[in-house]
Structures are given as C-alpha cells and as structure tokens.
Length: 362
Image (cartoon, rainbow, N blue to C red; front, top):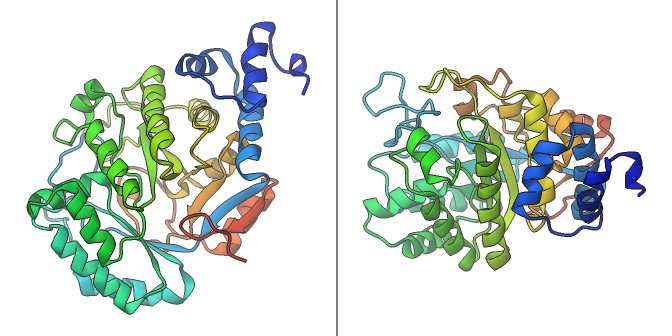
C-alpha cells in the first residue's frame, strides 16, 4: 500500500512497520494513541485483523450464568453485593443445571463466572462441574476468573496448581479473562484495593496454560488509568503469551459508571474506545482474536468495532448476565444467531460460528 495517501511523513515508518506485520514497541503504541486518527487506526487494525482471521468474524452459541452476585471484594467500579444485602442472590447447583437444560439443544458453551462467594471453595465448584459434565457431556465449560480461582484455593487450602488440576479433572475446559482490570498497582489501589495483584492474575493464567487450560484476557479501561497504563497492561499480556501461547482472545471492557462508587468518573468517548480496540489489535500480535463483548458495549458499537480490528462478537448469551446492565448497559442481553450473522454481514464481513477454542462449526 502507498502509505503516503493516508499518513503524514512522520507516520510513514510506523505505518509501514504495521502493514508489514512487524511487532511494534510500547512506545510506538503510545504514538498511535497520540498521533494517529481513528480512520488511520481503522485502516491499520483491519490490516492486522486480516492477517489473523481474514474476512471472518466469529460468534458462538453460549449461555452465561452468574452463580451469585455476592462478592467478598468491594471493587469501586462494580455493582456486586455483600452477603447481607437484600438484593443479593445465589443459585444452587440444581438451579444451574436447570438453566442449562432449558437451552442445552441450542448452545455449545456454558460460561460460568460471578461474584467471589465467601463460602464456596474448589471442592464446591468441582462438584458443580462434575454435575454439568455428567448431564451435558459434550458441552464446553468455560468458567471462573483468576480472582475466583485464587479465592477458592484459599478456602480449601490448595495451591493454585492443585486447584486448577482439580477443576480441570472435574470438567473445566477453559477460563474467561475477567478480573484483570488494569495491572498497574497504583491504579488497582484506587479501583480495587482489596483484590489480588495483577501479578497474581498473570500467575494463575500461566499455571492454567501449563496444564492445558486455555483462557482469554481482559482489560477494564476508561476510568482513571492513562494510555501508558493501558499499553503496559497489554505488554504484560503479550509477554506472557510469548511464553505460553495460551490466550485465545483479548477483550477490552469499557468502564460503566452507573450504580457503583465511581459514578463521578465520566465514561470515555466512543472515539477513544475505538482507538483502544484498534491499538489492541495492532499491539497484541500474538493473541489471535480480539473480542467486542456486545452486551457491555451495545450492538451498534460492537458492529462499528469490526472496522477497528475486532473479529469476535462473543455469542448469543441467552439473557443470562446482569453485571453490565447493573452498571449501565441498556442492552437486552440476548441475541439469536440470525441477528449476530446479520450484524456481521451488514458490516462487510463473513460470519463464522466457532466453538469455544475457535474451531469453525459448519
């Protein structure tokens, strides 16, 4: 491509590097935030997306279940509850089996993550997983953030390696990427001071990858962090991926400011959000997929994000997740496959159904 048509002279070298598929540095990623426009970033990110997945955009048929909204942690950006609060809830193992049974013929994955309950340990969740696998042996179980697993292990006095092995043997197939927030410890002291460190999160995922449990990775952005801290977060993920190659997808999660103790922090503008997605696609050259989690972002933004490097829209969800509606998302948390396919094709891409580890389903 003749970059002179689209980029100023001082941008040519970096743009050429990106078009050639070369790795960029953290300093160069900051330049993308500071010096490049959204249309320029769109062009660069779509080029990187083409290298990863061509013209495909993926989705799956899944069910999200939050076993409880009770949480021992008190993150300032979150709307989870203390055990004593009137609107707290929990589902029994039978409740979860019933929810799965209602849609089992129409899903390939159940995604289980929620608050960190003060009484539930590894053995409790291992029994739950065994029950699901016994009832639905072909269903992929993606479950539990690193934060949840760390606390479960403390409850049952297991090491992280022992806990992960127990969960894997009980039926855990993969892990979501939640709980990462921003790895910068100064920011974590502001937004989630009680939560385990960023290094703890990275360690859990590294140990999961070591025993064959793949995972995703997230970043909560748009609150009190800056661009440098976003890139530092992504660089730590990129460094771990170089070692393990265990991450399937990266999921930037936009901070929502309703019904939490950071409601005085203004949400970021859409332009900044799109730049963040594009730069993530360019910088994270070793994580194959970039996901826009549409229940949190809204259908319109999710569709627009496909022009900024996104190649995955998650799945049908089945109206089963509440964490984002509580924090300000107005989306109906369910979408059928035809709606997902139309959203993708209307944006000019080819919709492809996938399983939980990105094998295509015909």
